[in-house]
Length: 140
Image (cartoon, rainbow, N blue to C red; front, side, top):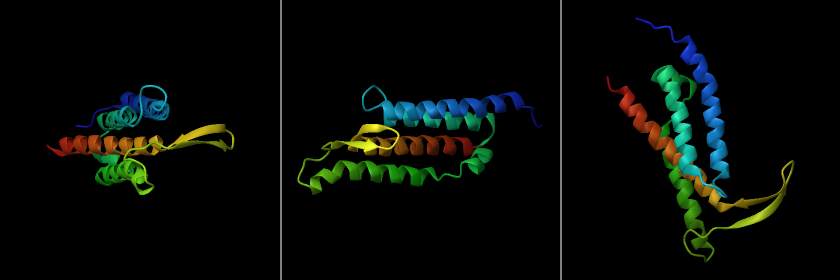
């Protein structure tokens, strides 16, 4: 029997973007305030799980055709490469580098290698969380 979930599906489409953009804000603000890759990844995963609850797993897979195992692997490689790179230039493992750059429209901004590491953490958290959710959701 097909249920009429128009209200929950419409609301989910709006709330998904609110949660997703908030997760990006938390991710970007994580270098100076609480947050970062882990919390941003959890928020992104929760937004995707909301889509799965409102629609179904197959519909979400069609809309977001992401292989979360590959996403996890890419995140691990990015985090490990960012942490290991300083050893190749004579610095200790996990040494943080930053500099200031004049960016168009944004002006003078500081760019950090911690951002690359956090990106890796973000991808790992989204990948692992969604792999677990999909595995649980596939069981009948």
